[in-house]
Image 1 (spheres, rainbow, N blue to C red):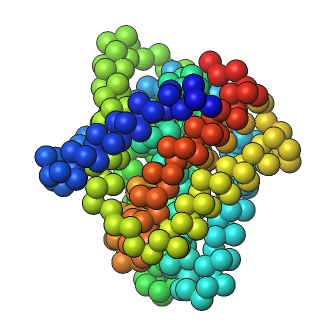
Image 2 (tube, one colour):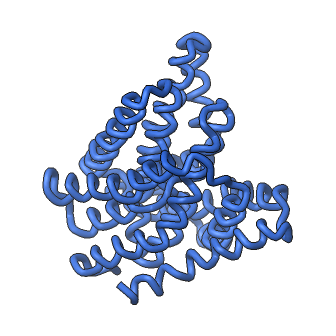
Length: 313
């Protein structure tokens, strides 16, 4: 446990540096936003494209793996929604809470951290989960929020969803990488090296950006945020473990990557969605803050448990 904690500590220290830089106003909100845009549109996209394009198509498209992840994630999603409805809150708020309970920071945090801790072979599996998160649950939250409000026609909702998909650089880079991989198109050495250099900025940049964004988050609605953090850090990886190890057993390494990814804290992009639609942004903000802080311990515990069962590369 101590060894794993020491391996994960540098990643969280980078988040801490970003937090302190923004909290002390040394790094302004505008600067944090610019860094996030650089990582999102350039560094992380280059990393995703390079990894996906250089893997064999079978490594980046496994229907069973994606189905297991979707089933287990949907199970926790329904639990979070049921709790929200039991509390009598609107459908739109329930959708946002459910999103907080199952969508982890596997883009900005998972890919850089797990690629180093579990080996680059983890990236292909993470990208499949990221595709499910963006395509399925990213679409679902838009449909539930706009549909529950009776805003717009089916056409306008579909247009919003499609626009969100085709303008998401992570999803586009994964899709392009999948295409290159499927067609077995060789990438010229200079281009591959360019992508490697640009992608190398993703790890420190993304972690610093996460920390800087946390400095602007509030800790209101602590009880609900605590429940959602518990759902994300405990229920989600537990459901994934049950599905991937017992119900529909996967190859051990693949299962380990899926469980580790599910143990990551709530994704920051949910706050952007919540703020855009005006649905419980403070609740989401608090959940991101609490789950990220708690994950310093919980992620180490999950990785230590997995390390006893699977030999990481």
